[in-house]
Image (cartoon, rainbow, N blue to C red):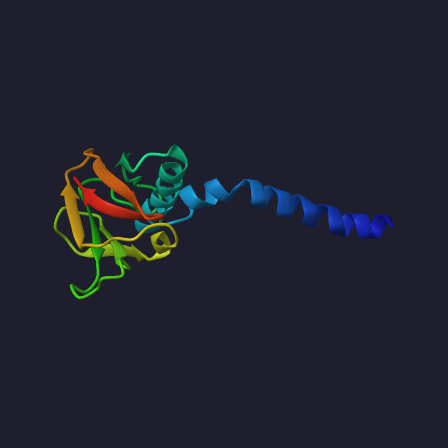
Length: 143
């Protein structure tokens, strides 16, 4: 019995530790595009529960790990023919340089009906507006 406990207890402790640390992993073990997608997920849920039709929030990218330390750019990209709102997020670690990270995780929570692109200088936040229409949350603008 003691031998079984020596095996089972550390495994159970690890499961509990990791289950409670989901937010830790989302923040510290991800790239800038994925962290933005997590914020979109959370803000979309807040909009749904608020009873409101729109919500504007501020996004400030974190430089660590794997994020922009200065100027940055965020794009929702897809073909112009796309009407399903399934555009990927791309981020860049500069105002106008090459794209660095990408994700489609946000598509679990939101749709993006139009291509959107914003670039900011170091320290400037991005203002993102979400709209709830017929049960679907849409990203409608970035400033």
